Image (cartoon, rainbow, N blue to C red):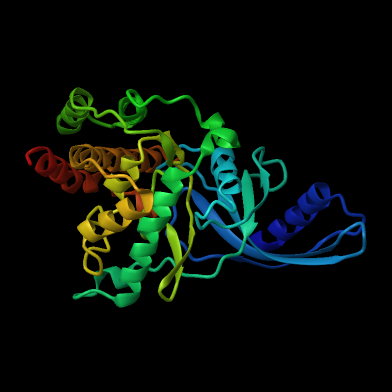
Length: 334
């Protein structure tokens, strides 16, 4: 039995349990989705079932399986809960359907959402002179980010993401990634150690606390022609300073700058959010983003070194650090 057949069998049993139906649902078209993601393995499938009332339901779905060890250490529950809480919020997300955090049904934890049309292709970002469709999608992203950061999470399950104060938001994220640095580094990395020290000494106070996507950028969104259809890959979601997302979204390796200059993106964001972005706070989070991505790379490299993953994408990830740290020092010198 190949993997698709095993997943079909496991999903059928899972849906019998979740849906409480007498006749087994039909699970078809199980297929791996081409992806460059490292924290989740995406599969598509179609589920067909009859409700106890006799009504037929058919749902095209996307299943996200928790991947083997790699560059991130994140649970599925917060990601699934965030997507579920944001339904009908004005933030474009896929409809959350079912979740198994135990791994009992498929051997790995997973969750399922409704299928959303679109592509995550990043090649158009590199077109000289820009692409009109990417400009439109980037403006959609600015407005979606503003709606996310204005979302009232206090009456939703997202309160379970923890207690964060404006004074402690930056320091909480910094502590998380510095602790990971202490655990994951394979050598001293004095330049990165200094980066954490500088960030700690210059941490800003948040204007307010919001839901932060944590990995907001092209590559983690779907778009159809010139329209953003969904924000995806919520594995780093948390409560914090909304400016954190803005410090990440235009990093050099995934920036849509050629199609939409960053200042125009920020203007669209500020208009939708009805709130200005403090430029010094933004600079701190841009610098923090370089240290954070350096740590993600070190975690991936260690996972490959220890053979907890055989994903070849992680084999040389430590070699990305010089470029990230060069950018960090460029930012703090401004």
